[in-house]
Image (cartoon, rainbow, N blue to C red; front, side, top):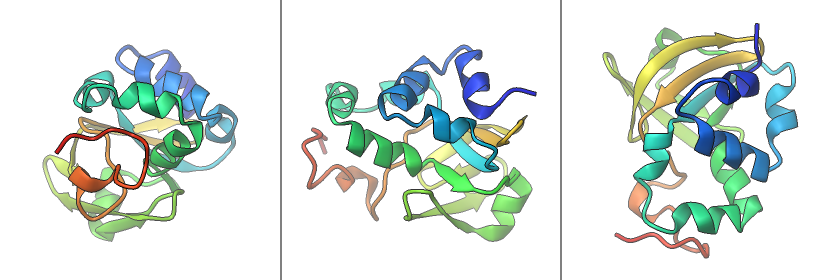
Length: 149
């Protein structure tokens, strides 16, 4: 079975995520035994970010790594587990609210495909890049990443 990174690399629709993981130097970590639960934004999710955001993040690998770590949870959790938990703590150390049933919602993102098993964890494909902070519209405040409200 392939690792989380290998699956992202070999699945169409995740090229932006794969590039981001490489720039943030997280490939090795996400290929480790884990296990991890990854909320994986697809290319369409990244395309919804304001113009210039991806470029700014690529130029700021520490901030990019922080945002990507917010999409990862230690442990392998299927959708049914997440629903029961209601809230999880990311590798970035912030909490992520989980709600809904069908579809499952992860903060302000909808799970498009759940429970994809990898060698080192579980992947849930999401339609929106989730951001730390109480209000997603203000998650880039205090950084040099532009965010239009």
